[in-house]
Image (tube, rainbow, N blue to C red):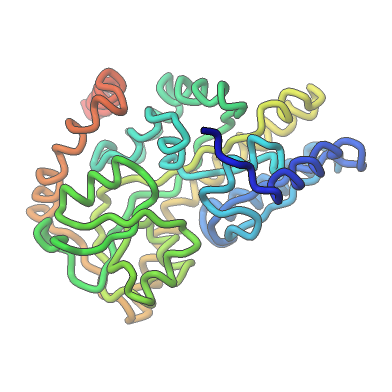
Length: 332
């Protein structure tokens, strides 16, 4: 049975059909994080570059912090044309029906950014974007955020420390399996609801890159942060395919060039933004920041290795194998 489309989404989509008739072409770019995160800054940089490159023929309206749509709503809004551009986390595409994107959620599959970029900027990344086309979506770029830390109101130094902890996750079969493998109880929840859930004790902890942990002030309601780098969080910049294909060729080319430059910017600032955020958390004194030792990190990797094997059927054994080969090739 098809889900009923909310009236507010239909109204917004109908209003969007007049986008060309009202002067400049309007691109509504919606996302769920703060302006001062890597994604927020990259979205604003794209706005600046796109409007300059098109000499005002395009106006980009950026809506951060879920002010238009929450996690579960934004992909449907894009398909309906209520917004033209999003940058959802890669974990969003699994529940959306494209399970292959869940490879990015696998713990410890990317040892570093260089290995990650060989995947996103190579054949695997391009093939994944092709899978979006049937959904009426065009993929434009992969934006980096960074590797994740764990936070909780208890120290998390060894896998056994997770036993019974209620951990917020994005809706993802992989992240669900990851937490259950550690002995935790996964709780899927919209990003905009996490701070209040942590504050109220609805969940005990969560995982995030440091920039999200800091800008959403989650560290204020978490006593412990573990720098585990166990998983990756990145984004896919996507557009409504009908909207994109309907743009004049010169406009589309200018926007594509602006996106390439914004992507270079996004992927350059991600690490420094996360490093600065982690330092700010340390200086706040509200959370104890702990970096895993080599022995502890090895125990985490060993504990989480079964997740990759258990999810092969869902994500694709050949796909996972191709990523592992690409990573191994780069380490030679």
